[in-house]
Length: 285
Image (spheres, rainbow, N blue to C red):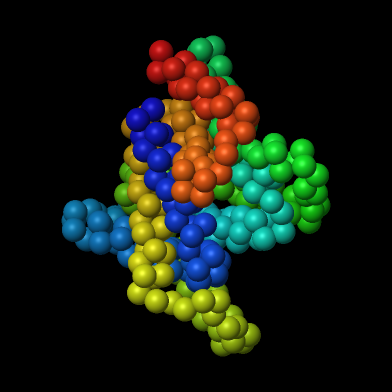
């Protein structure tokens, strides 16, 4: 459970950094720079630790396609945020945890007791309730139907990629698995950026100042730290439990916005937090 909380904390911070960075330099530059920073960081960890990557071939056939899935998941997420409100996208994305939990029970033969099943369900639902913005929905904000397919796609793709990473971590270890996925994903984004720049020659939104680049790098490191915690937890513990706890990450950007942007919490925020706390207590019982 501790590893799941670590993943939630760092993924939540990554979402906050992504919001600030996206407004400053745009989505394209944010995702490219953050992914490259994460790939460089995990490569440094491998080199500094002297970790042996000799077993990477055992999972490369699975994880390289997963890197492509992860890249498309990021694109789908940001496209959904562009077309529709966070009130729609964030709750859907928080429900990603349902997919790895179900797959872990089916394919990894993880057995959960009734209390653990209840705790996982309450935690995930609580995260969804907390990340929703019922006020914007009540005041008549219309959700563009065009955002729904992108939001659903990102949820399914992130859930699938999370399970694949957890499965690989159990088989060859978290560091080998994470290094392959992160470097492959970053390479895909770099190739895509080179092609787009060569063919389309788009104008950069905002200036890539030192501070902006540092913010993107911080985002990449926070995202990587969360994924390290998730991968390590999946290696040594139950994927279903780690995933359910990690789904609480939307609480950080939600209440970060309340603290930093003087937003007022809605009643569903309190209800969602209470559900998350109850779910975590059940999981830790």
